[in-house]
Length: 163
Length: 424
Image: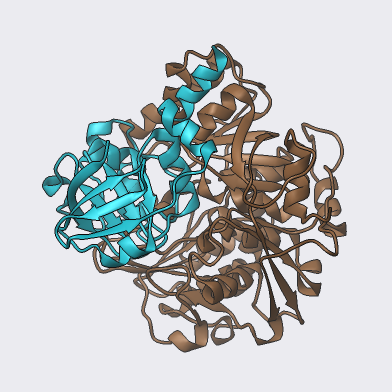
């Protein structure tokens, strides 16, 4: 099923210190982490984000620390999908492992503006920008990752493997 | 087929006859590591899965180092979760306050990681151990949970980038400057998903602690791992470790002459001066001499990048008989208890304290804006740490400059970013 929502636009090199500042890393509570999501990039984000909304950013999204609290906070505050020109590698694997849909598209990253409404179809590899009446294609995940995603994350795929 | 050092170590740990860049592989890990921030999430996942035991009690390493000694009640709860987990599952390598140190200084020092190992850690600076010739990379908490259960991790085989350093190092230039120079050249995503292999005559004579500092910051260029082929200096370093948990000095791998690289870059070290990375990216690198008259409020010397004994000796050389500029806070944090004791025995602690600085118990503390030196709004620090992102050391409107220990110490004396030659 496609993800559809309003876009919150961010720049290049958004790092995990901005996504979830270290001062809040003394908890694993999802609701608490959600309340500080993106705080040092946009202090008002956690208040204005609505369920299903989409984050769009430039290159190297999620660079820096390995803290899984960053993608956890993004999921917990209701964001349905993250689109970026590229992702930092630990953020990328964390997102796959916990089941946060992320999509790499240089074209979409260039064209999508703040508050655009977009839908993301991960099965077909298409992003539709409903505000600008444009669409952008993106490559599908390799089969290896699709398996993890289909299982609902890494731990679930291990559980299935054990049975 | 010819392989790079990174590929050789991956192949050795994979269930495959050959490997190629971009392939997904499952590898056996020699060590998996977590800390007081990342392990609590991993422990939750581990318990949710209903696992009965860890795959190997000696290969799981837990180090509470980020918010320790516990800075508040919530952090104390997270530390307690580690201690309880370690006790419940009989994990041998759990290091309580008093025994712990900053993880990436502690593991090499104790011989818990060795050349040729494959190490994953739920901490981005796990790439440090490439300085010993190990493949090591940062992962997330779920990866750690999975590795604690299965002893395995999924990885994509990275392409390798080769960085060749030649020429004699200038005075006051060390491993930190070489890696800042590299990040400044290729950018914070210049090595995204790739292995960064450092070699050349300059690296061959670079002390192991400087090599660890270099590989430590591979992640700051987006790299999967940093790595340096182990050699005589590595063997000497390994042989000097007392009471090693494993005998020997590890396995020494090196790249084949005809191994494939996605890029080869040469750097003439004779043209590299002491550097600083200016706010707010580690790639915003300038020579110290180009950023004169930047006043500072705080200096931090420590961290997994530059909190080792050679770093403290270098800082002490600058600070001996000098005073920290009035109004500036100097915070020196030896990375481990062993380094702390060495600094006491060598008289380094005395030099720092007499200069007007703080000499702290080991902790990651201020590097990530945790505790032990948080910046107020509008304040500016120079630190030997590894990141200078917005709000990294405290208030979102504070600033961090990154440098080597000599520059940081000279800046403490001058009260502004300063070249060591201005002080000595």
